[in-house]
Length: 97
Image (cartoon, rainbow, N blue to C red; front, side):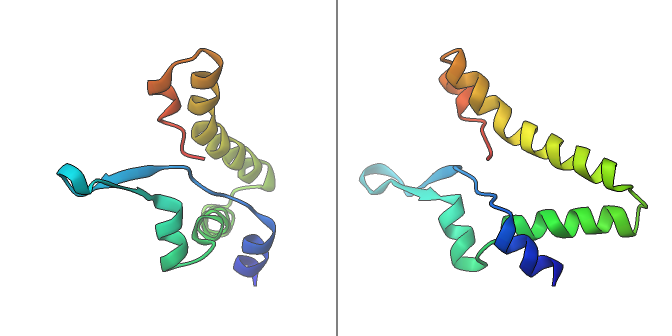
């Protein structure tokens, strides 16, 4: 039930891509599209499961779960934000979310 609620409320996507093939047959493949083909809404489900595991098994209070969520967001989004502000394309490429 928690996974279904998390998948319907949480939006977590990644703009990561990779190239496949060689020579003239290079193809850019979106990681998010591949994950959606395998298991739609996998990233939100993994986040909910990770937070549930932390609170249930590790005894995290809700405040720590909130801080962990904010840290995941910052680590995933901050490089792209700083790269766009300071016009550093290499840093923008490290954006995960």
